[in-house]
Amino acid sequence: MLVESLNWRIQNEIDNILEKPIIPVDLYRSIRDTQLVGLSGYSNEGIPVFAVGVGLSTFDKASVNYYVQSHIQINEYRDRFILPTATKKYGRPITTCIKVLDMTGLKLSALNQMKIVTAISAVDDLNYPEKTETYYIVNAPYIFSACWKVVKPLLQERTRKKVHVLRGCGRDELLKIMEYSSLPHFCRREGSGSSKRSSSDPDDCFSLDHPFHQELYNFIQEQALNQELIKQGSLHVKIPEQDPQDAKIVEVIQAEFHKLGVQNGSANGDDKE
Image 1 (cartoon, rainbow, N blue to C red):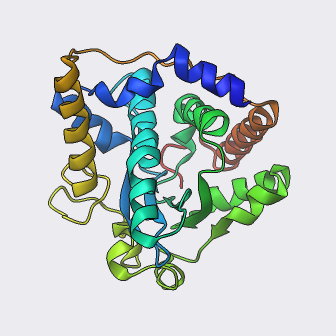
Image 2 (cartoon, rainbow, N blue to C red):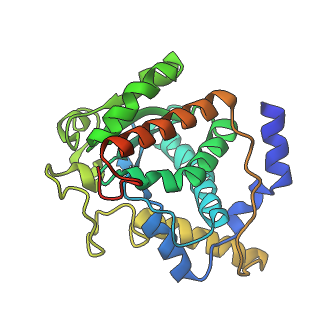
């Protein structure tokens, strides 16, 4: 697995990916608006907290290559700068992160994004393994609960232990491990509107205007200028072949989504959550 990952890095020039900005900036902003992920802060132990808007990510404003490139750039920036900086600050090795997954807006039409989601998952599983120590699921609608019931038994025990489904927006539970200022914006208030995004919200860690994304994008731009590498076009990264067990889990999820669609009397369930 290590040799295959090293070969993947060499073949796709991953060591240089932080020198290849996604331009123009309006395209990158569109990606940030449709691939919802960001660094919201740190736990009390100094572990980076990444927020992911699973239910509201649409992946519909750019090609798969751009979304995969953006995802890998965040991974690489995390591993090369975020984690080493936290390690130095807290005086102990910090090699993993916490992910808070917001399921607000999850619908049966999420099947349309299954291809790109599984591609990103394959990249992570085979080339960035064991980088997440805990997954917290918040704002989970019925559709998630139904899928989780059939997927959970298929997961390895160590993976199951990492996943915690929290009640509502998860604020009270998360405040046990982090300060309020590190809570993702969608965990700060209960209610159906907890994840409704506002471009003027300074705490929205998904936004390109958030300090984390500004820092990341400016860093990549500077590296490209230093190398005189700025040019338009996506970076084509070869997607690793999915693990058979992961492929089986995807099939189970798809079957469950179809079943729920039939139960709801909807072919694609666009308006069902």
